[in-house]
Image 1: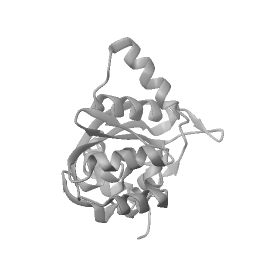
Image 2 (image 1 turned 60 degrees about the vertical axis):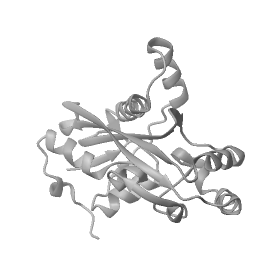
Image 3 (image 1 turned 30 degrees about the vertical axis):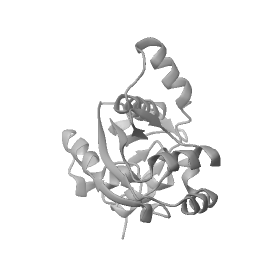
Length: 212
């Protein structure tokens, strides 16, 4: 069975590969800011878990149908992540000064990393059923110095990741504790994804298609 990943996140791709799954990467091209703005205009401010689940669903749904002229035959996975500190939701900082400010605010403290998952059963080239769930992990940061923050921001790594940090690369030494599934912090919870496949009657080892 084939898994189609509706995301261009290198971290999600690497995580799935390490777990024995070689997905087909299909960019979703969802305008995330516009989607959230539209939802909030209708329903009011979205909590972090609802926001990441909304975007995960929209990404998965955006790639339904055909790929290069042939029907997608397998499962489609959409994912999204956001970091929450003091009730404030943070996505990708994009700009160095924004990332620097966030690190100065979160060092020595604990925040929540929310990861949304949406899985569509698209076997046979048609949408059969879909399931979704959000996972959350508490992340505690070291009391890093200003010079460490400056060096980390200068590396460019924190600019395009939710919360301005990673756990599986340069940012790893700046994280002292994770409560919850560690893979949630990378970009998707493998344990949650396994549970979703089980809801669809799929045994996790049947997805292994990559030689480690």
